[in-house]
Image 1 (cartoon, rainbow, N blue to C red):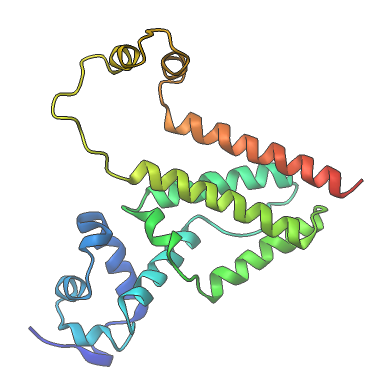
Image 2 (spheres, one colour):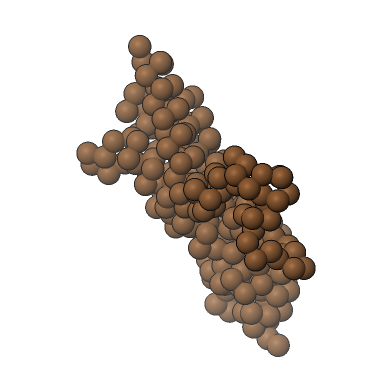
Length: 217
C-alpha cells in the first residue's frame, strides 16, 4: 500500500469528509486512524501530516457537522424567536444526519470559523435587545438541550429477550393500574421524538421571551 505523504492528494478537508462518510458505516467507536487510512488507501503516518491526533480529526468532523446546519444571523425581517426555532431544527437535523453526531459534537473543541459564526449570531441577538450574557446563555441552553435530546435518540437500547405484544398493557400491569398517569401520557403522546423535541424547544423559547422581557423593563 502506497503512502502519499504531504503531496499525494491528502488534505485536512479530504480527511474530514472521509471520516464523515466512514462514520455512517462504523460509528464513532469503530472510527480509527488506521481504519480511515485504509479507507483512503494510504498508511496511517500519512494522515498525521494533516491531523495530529484522533481527537483533532473528530474536532474537525464536529466543526463540519455544526457548520452544515447553516450558522449565521437571522434572515432579513426574521424575528429572533423564529430564527432560533429554525436554527434549532437545522442543528438537530445535522446531528441526526450523522451516526453518533451528538457524541462527536458534545465532546469537541470547535474551530475558529464556528466560533466566528457564533459571535455573529450573538451580535445579532444583541441587536434584538439581548444582553451579551443572555444571548450566550440562550444559545448554550438550546444547544445543550438539542445535544442531550439527540444523544438519547441515537443511543442504542437493549431489547428484552421477549418484548411484550402490548408494551403499554405490560406497563399498566407493572404499575397495577392500566390507566396509570404514565400509561395515559404515553398513550396520548405515542412517545413521538419530534413532538417531544418541539414541546421542549417551545418551552425554552417561552422562557427566553420571559427573561428578555424582564431584562428590558
